[in-house]
Length: 281
Ligand code: GLU
Image (cartoon, rainbow, N blue to C red; front, side, top):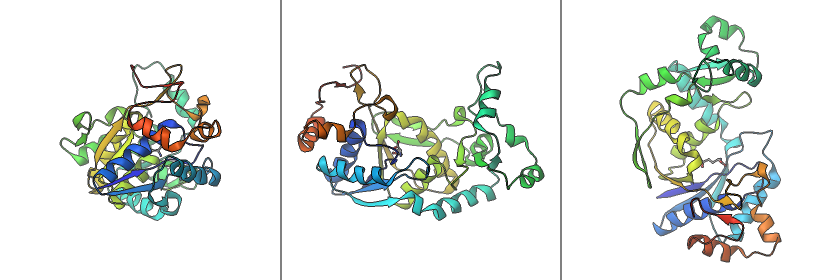
């Protein structure tokens, strides 16, 4: 039994991250398994070394221990190999669109649209090759990928039970960023398999991502872990915790005098510090 906590070092951890880490840690501890830390830092522009150090401080403060970390920025060759396999299968294509171009085409009143309108899917192989030196990401041809995977793709969620993967509404998702041979989806899927993760614990905000990950597992012949999507902690106004909304970080709670071990025990018993709440409670 192997679980993991996989934060992105783009800011300090908040209480929701701490809760996720505690759940993943405790699941492994109860089974006599391993709990891994993985730093998801392929976004070089937003990742910061000081936040990596902060993650270790915060987890120690909560009384957790872990193996690792591994850094995704040091594992790009693994993702590049997976991208190469998807390219060889003809399931990905170069996309040269800017964010502004995509936004402009999506605001056209054509009813419900997939997230990306597929503009670059329609480039010929020669056209795409000719522009290959220009900045581009790689997108999954969702329809072709689903056809290739064939049949029902099932994954198991601890709370929801068996789930049939339905990634189609997400359209041609990004498989590799403009500046790296992977996106979150590809790197996380490859790493969970390569690290032997049997149980993925993460917030229910990533439930939809699992549809995509299940598809990638089928395409790349990777095992499917068990999933545990947990409820999200809310702030005093009932909103999800988020760095951009200025939610207090674990470091803020520590600076205000909180004790990490007491906080962790409280969370395990379903108790939150004041000014936080559970959904529908
Ligand atoms: N790195 C992601 C995040 O911080 C979590 C990825 C995952 O648990 O799969 O939101």
